Image (cartoon, rainbow, N blue to C red; front, side, top):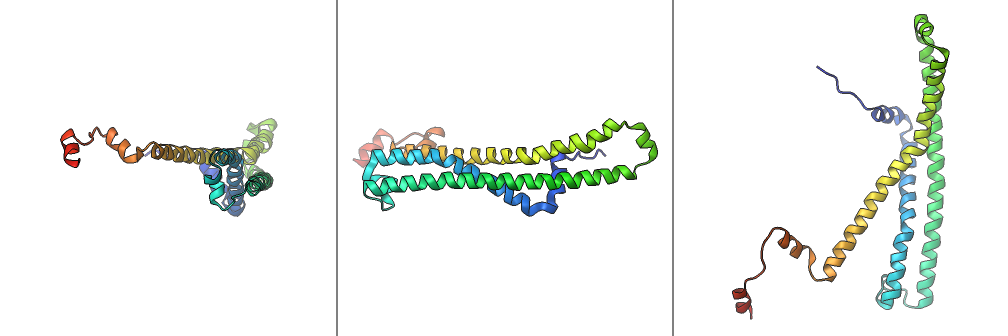
Length: 204
């Protein structure tokens, strides 16, 4: 029976469970940073909606009827978004860097202890440069991955989900605005026809 190979990422996830709280908080800060990083683009759409629809805009529906209050609202939201985006960027950088350094130190100590317990024959067959590369370079690569790579993966995933949802919502609103809706689209996709001329005459 062939054993199923365990992927290195699964080993890494299992290894950092002792710092589970720090990993969760770092992931949360990365996700929030990406949300507020996307928010200014959404805010541009809100500003365009305000210019086009004026008193019927989304901002006006929140109770901001005057021009001054609407401009103040847009300005305040803009400041808040950029402030939170910068705050969460600082927090996730601190959290991931701290987690990476803890994992790096713990792994290097355990690797060194393991090397000390190996037989003398193993050490004679290994070059000093190879052992040094394992203890230094390989562990440093893991530290760099935790420091930058994981956060980038989380942010790309969050960005994909949010942008996909926004486009889905825009398409839905566009279909409603042209009087089609999802029902008419579904009927055309499954090939069903609309009412026959005789049915139209009866309805009239």
